[in-house]
Length: 131
Image (cartoon, rainbow, N blue to C red; front, side, top):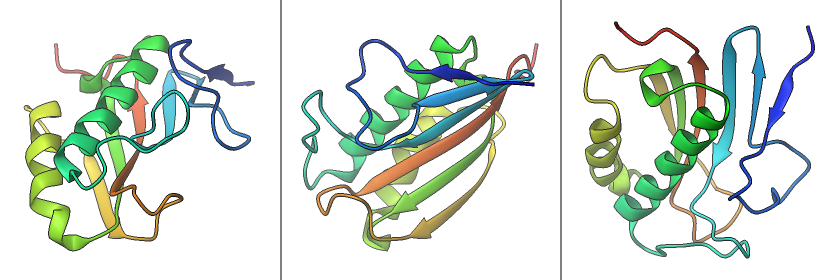
């Protein structure tokens, strides 16, 4: 089954050859989201909580463009630059997933831009949200 590319119109053109998300067979796969502005500049430099909020809003917008919601998220891949930011990232993350939490992993990595502190990629199953 072919997939459908999801590229919300309010987002800038991706910085590499990929789609913001893809949808296939009731599943939505959201690419790693960074806190980037329309011109590709890094937003909220030095503020892990604000970057996380921006990243998760980008995930939400991509999911909604595909017909899913944050409640449909079943798995998150969380990449952070520095473990010192882990508490700030988790505080924001928890607000976006208030009920049952999706599975996830979190690893420390070097991100594509040195000013980026967090990146999140998500998988959602449309209709998986609790009724």
